[in-house]
Length: 436
Image 1 (cartoon, helix red, strand yellow):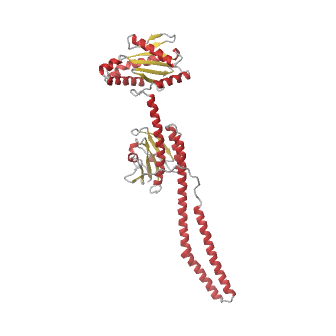
Image 2: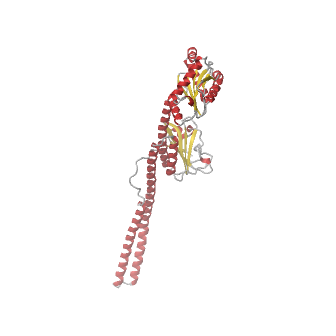
Image 3: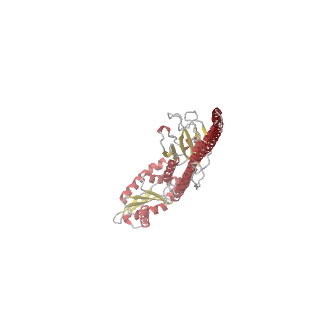
């Protein structure tokens, strides 16, 4: 399949105000038949009048018969020399107009579909909605053909999302692992592969299907980088493949533009909610989650933990080692909690764990497991050994999130004052006892 590159221009998005002229070819055919009937009728009427006139005035029958034969032959000759070629030309024009009308109808349908696609994508709030809208639009635009959309979460990542429209055999589906494996993505422009059996066949087709076919592929650009591809199958030698490529490119551009906006918004929200050093959630997320748990009357435990003698680590080993210690402890927290739990860094060397459906006693066990892992973590990371202190409470000990944080901080301060490297837990009776 010899690949051909094409910079397909985008289809205009304005909605047509008038329907396509679908009866032009029929009008031409009817007009031709009417004119032909008039000419033929006039010819034979003139011939008949001439023959009757000659017969009336006594012209011999042989002469009249000869004249009739002559006129018949002349009429046949006129048909062969004039009317038959003219009819052929009109038939050719009729076919051309029919094809143009069909292409115009398809183009108008594409413009209308593109307009609906643009409007729907403008209100899509997440990637799942974008993919759902894209699939629906492809079903409308590519009726009868097979189309595949492959998308990665980032340009270097593996393909993680795939939608298939139409009946595409498993052997004909694109099997690239990353977007960059596609030549169209690497080149940054659409390509047409006209034969699946040639040496330069599309990597997603060559040698893997029983019959020959062609493919049109175009990249999906997100934030200016190839992050996916849109691919449709066709018949080998089909001249409409390049027109198909234009439709695919317009669709891919629409999808890529909306994904750029959505991913940018998600990244901004994550940046605003994430501690830049450790990647844990920040105080803003903690406050929102506390309010949510209180609103739904959900039981939960709260742990406030602090690295002991962190200033000494910074002063002795430098801030780079101190940052690595913070990251190591953050990773230990992240690996020790469930998906529904929340780990936050709220400032300096202070961290908070929020554990739904846990009481203080169970939360203390989680902290103890983390503390027991610290020697192994610091040794593996080439860090100086350090310990942590913690205060543990649950929702029974205060009615507001701020009050719980304040109480946990008081218990943490007590753990520090009693020698550090320990956990103090608030009991159901309102007392606090060491857990270690």
